[in-house]
Image (cartoon, rainbow, N blue to C red; front, side):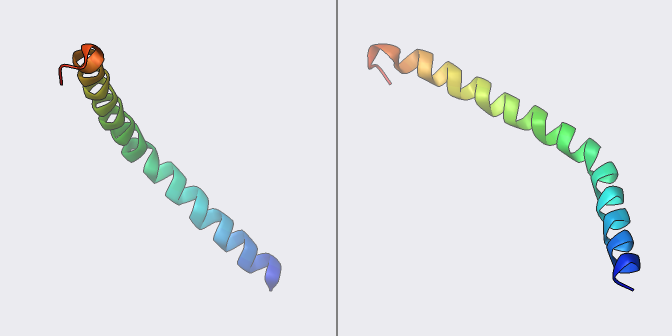
Length: 50
């Protein structure tokens, strides 16, 4: 019984990970854009002229 439950949980986790690939790719692009904005702002504030 424990083995069946473990296999069910593992399969559900695997399906969730496969379905989340596109979501994670989109989130990665969003994080990258935010990082670029932070870098731009850091460059602007380099001379203490924020």
